[in-house]
Length: 571
Ligand code: ATP
Ligand code: MG
Image (cartoon, rainbow, N blue to C red; front, side, top):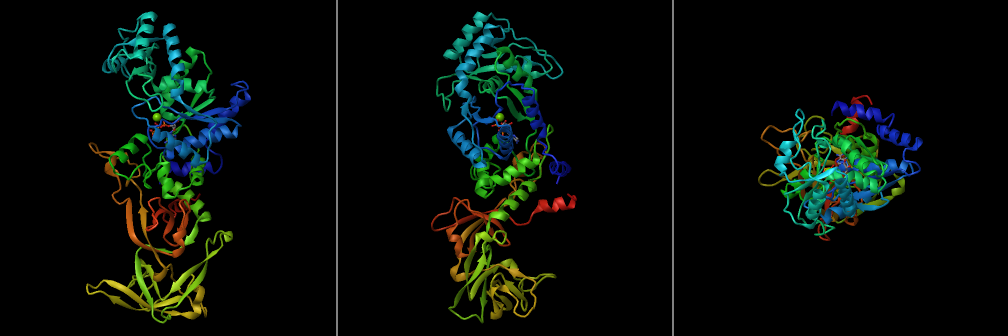
């Protein structure tokens, strides 16, 4: 738990902290800064990986604020980097945005603007504001200077407009090798802002683009493409994360030189979550190095990963609303997301009984061959969820942890001579145990009180423990996957020199149990349907399930760390 989090949640209970963005838009509406233009935003992912929880925040801001002001939002793929971008990512991103609950006005691609961007480059060259540079990438870096030293002009900086036009057209025609020349904006090599020291606008790259194929062998840089793409779409408020703040002068420079629609960039803080790493590039590395089982591994902080894990759009939107936006980067406790998730599931998840690590219990005085069905509420939080009939018989499974031959102090579950309640069924008392030759426990023998049917005390006598169970004859054997945090450090980037982020991976982030026993109603579980397995957590069916073998993911255990943290903080 970090201090900053306590503050940010306390603050959000009064005023949504994204109000500074809302304030800017409201002001622009009232001063008619954009005339009668509607508020237009965009969400601009690069299709070089799957979206993660951080993107959810940007999506909620871009779509949410536009919506509040009766505006519109485009989904725009920032696809100017053909070597890293793929159609698979384009498709996954669209599915993820929809899953979060948003729909775009227009689906756009920066690559649709390549011809227009090229025309504008010709104009800047003609106006003496851009030039072709023959320096190598290394030389350009050396000439750029540092934060404390000004840069030096390239010897090619004063080429005539005619020569620049000729060279740039030949760059486009494919006459030159990759890296041999670039087009640069002619701004100021001594600007205190390094981004303004004649930034590269175009590079030569003979690479096949996932949409434009081999049509282009020159590609615009992010800074040259982004603002103009905004302008083309008449984006009024182009919201992005703080690391782009230093790029804002350049964003404005291009728009001003070209005299096009004056889109404006506004920066807000990135979402960072403890025990989590939110960077597509690094997540790709996890996938490529097989440190996880793909982009949708339920331990991944990708939207596809947490969806498969059983997280819901409502919980993510609640998190984004609570953290809001500000102008300083901080870190949000992962428990806060888990808290919103439990809250959401508690209301919607039907209950079921499942035994993860089975121990057989025989009820000696229950008639052999008899079975009965006890009626159980599907969701005590929601009477409209109805009831179901759960089979009970002479042999049941309980959790291994729910029996101790020699109970420690304050152990209220089953032990020899102790009486406990089997949830919704009967009171039972442990009588004896059967052990294998090696001394390991095989089964526990109990007696039951037939007058306690439904789990109710027949004579006012009290039992302290209530346990879940599954009838052995009716049980469904299933695989259950339990997840822990992917990283074992709150800040995964906190690693010693010479190490790397992956040294902080939690080696115990996945535990697979192959022979859990589930109540039979779970045979009908559907993908996307949430369950609370009583006492063990929230679960959902995994897409690895087959007709023969069901696989369940634990979304979260029941214990709510965040509620405790809030209580302690007196919130
Ligand atoms: P990554 O480093 O994970 O690849 P990115 O910023 O390069 O992130 P983009 O595809 O360019 O990824 O991001 C699309 C939008 O999402 C941008 O406007 C970016 O500012 C925003 N965004 C990315 N990460 C976060 C985050 N952690 N919190 C809030 N917004 C984010
Ligand atoms: Mg990016």
